[in-house]
Image 1: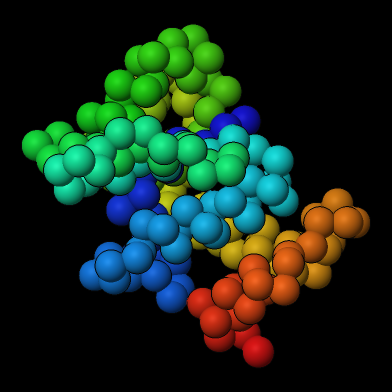
Image 2 (image 1 turned 180 degrees about the horizontal axis):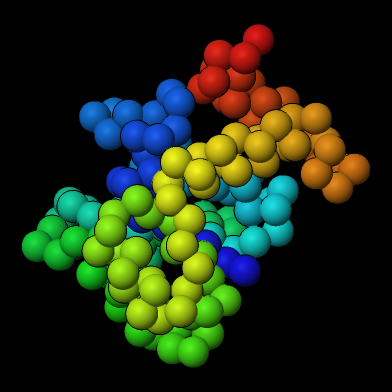
Length: 155
């Protein structure tokens, strides 16, 4: 199962991330890259309010980030992606605590995971990456480990 993530809805639920930070989206993408590697699941994350010239779809390893242009919101982009997926939307999990986005996901028979719960799953995946317990061999690089420790303060 893949994940469609309402990025700005998730950021405040993750310790160490803050919507007022200039690099909040990039830091979330970096964490999601680790999640993808450990859980072996595709992730698409949606961010609204992209500055002019920065909107569009960008690939970051296994993470696809959709930067939604100003004048449109991520909720609409997620709904459009669900429409595009059609019947295969049932194979995706929509990560959001936004009730309207949850209703849209239900109408497409997609699974729903509140952002708070996904934050717990993300933290567990980061722990697995740190200890190598996900599948016995996945480990963080020294740089990833240092970034994770700085982010969560777990020294």
